[in-house]
Length: 400
Image (cartoon, rainbow, N blue to C red; front, side, top):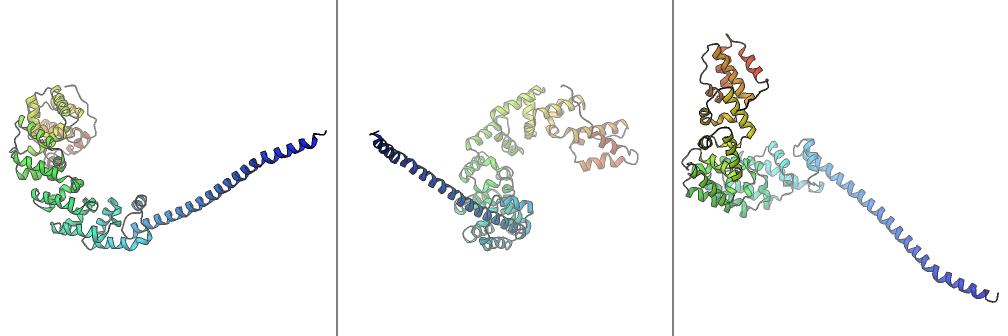
């Protein structure tokens, strides 16, 4: 019992020095928890404010695009998710729109331009838009050609005038005879305004050295400018490949055959050759058809098989006629070949002396109806019904 006070003292000291840190930790933990709760509340308030601001900005964007720029509500809502337009910058946006309108941009042009590149509203007029507009005017894009060019290639406002646009325009004007044709090239491949003009110059120089006329080089650049942007080694391969087939620069189809060759790999060429060989064509038949219609190599294997099958087994055309008229392979069987052949057969059976069958496949729909349907309407009113019905019937194929 004498030791009881001592034990109480030990217990007190133990409680004093061992429980105190635990209490401190509890206080610290409580403080941290309070801080986190405060921070969470602050973040929620900030997010609410930001969300409110974002909603306000998007609302202004939609309203501005519809009321000031003429976009449809659907288009404006879609664009408002991609570009930010703040109310405070409205005077600048107004000045951009006004500038374009002062240079023959119609409301439709403004809509097309903003739908393609809404960020153009942020572009500076004095250092970006105006110098490039004046540059185009100086290069012959007057009147409606100006807005049509800009709408076709809105990326000019994101290209360097001196390092990209000016050198490219100089190159194009050397080969292409007028602004209208340059516009055609840009419409086909808008990225041409920022293409590697040095690479293009090398390819153009090489073709001219090989005897390709300036007129044909122009046609190639206008209708398929991408061909002039490939590596020069590829262009050289294409030129040499055509030489081995006897296709020279003087050939009227030279540009078209070159376009196809530049798009095809060696593997694709050999695979397409195999398809024609499986249809019973010789290598000479293949090359002959390619010279006349190089785009026949772009038809699918199924399309070629079905067409050859119908011409050989149903129409009874000799292979030589098909080889001499490879354009026939590209026509739609259901919409063109089959209905016209049926009408030709009806006219033949009724002794109405239809003209050459192959020629009937070539003419336009309007001419065909006038000469082979409407012409006999008084005596053969059922021809139109037969023609329309034949387009609805399913086509069956036989094995070649």
